[in-house]
Amino acid sequence: MSEDFWPQYHSGSSSEKIPTIGYLDWYIPRLKEERPHNLSFSGMQYDWKVKDIMGDSINNIAEHHIPELADPRINVAAREGVDIDNIVICHGATQAIHIALCAAMVGRENNKLSIAVESPSYAPIPQSPQLFNCSINKVTRSPNGQLGPWRIDRDEWLDAIKKSSILMITPILNPCGWDYHLEDRDWIVEVCKQHNVIIIADEVYLDSKRVNDEYVAFHSLGKHCISINSLTKVYSLGMIRFGWVVASKEITEQARRAFLTLSGMMGSPTLRIADSLFPLLDEVLVSLDYYRKQNLPLVRDMLERLEIPWNEPPYGLFGAIKLPHGINALDFVDGPCKEYGVLAVPGLMFSPDLKGWLRIAWSIEPKLFSKAVVNLEKALILAISEKTSQ
Image (cartoon, rainbow, N blue to C red; front, side):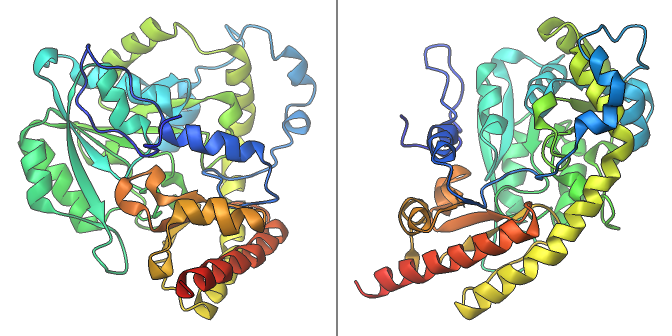
């Protein structure tokens, strides 16, 4: 098992091995432990009651969807506010990353292709380009000791953008849960436009802001911008692997060809379930808002008691805490947290620079969350006691 749990930013090479997705080497064994207080979820935990919603139509789930179902792009296009020809449906956001890359690379010299990729990040973001033997230029977003959105170093980003044909980003950043500062976002869009750089934005958490006045999908900011989204994270439907790419019609035509090459066709069960649930997606957003209102005060109070500062994101499913006294988050999760049955995610799963950070999610039912926070506080008290007594 790899000890480098964080995303790898090496340049691709046919002589090297495909890098592992290290965080799964760590995370899957801990999921198997079935710790009773799980604050590690990266997506909303929502009971869809699919059988009740689909009714008798669930008996047709294995039947072919052609010609019975309408074009699945219609639902997505209505939600995204675009024409159906701006949409490509695919098997989840991770496949959408590869399809978007294929489309964005058209017309570029592949043997010289260089891609700027943001850190921290979800590992497939920097590691997918390496499957195409691309050169990687890492750019960073960091807290800089400030409250509010994590910020970019514009000199660093400009240097990387000038060297690159594509920029890959995750607007709502894992693990901190913050979106871009509006000034940084607008600067990125304009600089990439000036330098003919295509932006691929993984927006799987962005719909947590859909009712916020600041909600803006990257695809609406220019023809050089591609948005990726899915029903997995915010909408708690990862089991059906339904995602999409939104871009200009020129880019989506290439993305459509890439999807047909890689997959040929979406599965009928996926399309039937998605078609039944799309009209109800906003109900999940209502539950997400309810979870935030019920759960976040418990986190605030707990951290205040322990005098641990917290830069709380105003939306989303999770946030990150910088542990006090130099506590290592990996040791904390496998030590005091395990003792009290708590599972959370160390920040180094997203960057080696975040070894002292812990990501916690509030996307579970409030009664369960309340018990989890009680035990997280016990684990923190134990860890602080052990650290300060050394």
